[in-house]
Amino acid sequence: MSRDRQSAIERLRSRRQFVARAAAGTVVVALGGLYVFTDDLTAAARAETRKDGRPRVPPGQRVISALKPMGGEPGDPNPARARLRVHGEVDAPFELTYAELLALPQLDLALDVHCVTGWSVLGARFRGVGVKALAERARVRPRARYVIFEAAHGYTANVPLREALAPNVLVAHALEGRPLARAHGGPLRAVVPDLYFWKSAKWLTGIRFTTRDEPGYWETRGYHNHGDPWREERYA
Ligand SMILES: Nc1nc2c(c(=O)[nH]1)N[C@H]1C(S)=C(S)[C@@H](COP(=O)(O)O)O[C@H]1N2
Ligand SMILES: [Mo]
Image 1 (cartoon, helix red, strand yellow):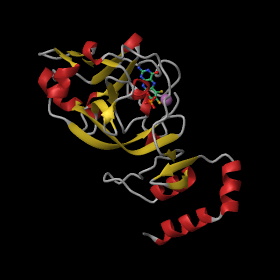
Image 2: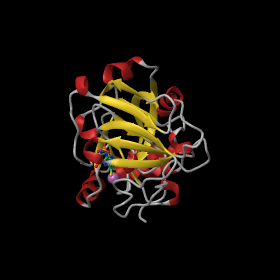
Image 3: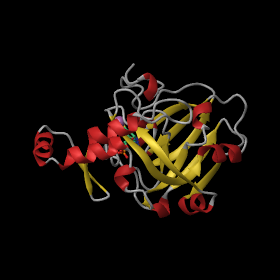
Image 4: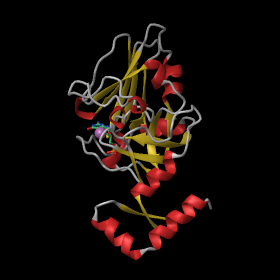
């Protein structure tokens, strides 16, 4: 155990400080039986650097222990009726049932996600199919430049093609070893971890490739068109 971590735990042993911080409103989470304040999770993660050289925690973000349900208009919860359409600027459009999606090669990825409202979750374990594999199967035409994630009730999110084909971009159906809860987009959601979390469309119904950009639900309501957390591309 690092000295920093040890001293952090010793600080937490001070009940007086514990009560003072709890009263001040910093959130307490249970982590392996220990109580840890979100400020300590954030401080520990701030020292870390990603493989791409960027800090693990983007500026202005605070680390919490699990995804917060952020709302939205849910789609049909029945996996037996779920369909994913892969279409648009492609030579071989196709549609998958939930069972067909689960029969494709699966990726298990621990992903960091960053909500524009200021919380981040580190290492959330998602399981699903890579968007890149779906794009290859659909034979995306060379002129395609954007991916539009399509969800229930007309929610969409636009992502530049190159970023949507990154190896950590998923159509996820499970989180932490369980089928994705409805509040988190079940049965199917997109996960685009390196852009703010609004790009990760819940209740996903389609992936559409386009030549032209199409700002989506939040991008037409004042959020930034791109949404890079490290550049704090929060609002337009
Ligand atoms: N279909 C749909 N997807 C959505 C949203 C939504 O309102 N509808 N909200 C987005 C926003 S703003 C965020 S922060 C994340 C929240 O995901 P969570 O509720 O699983 O934390 O979902 C994104 N995906
Ligand atoms: Mo959000």
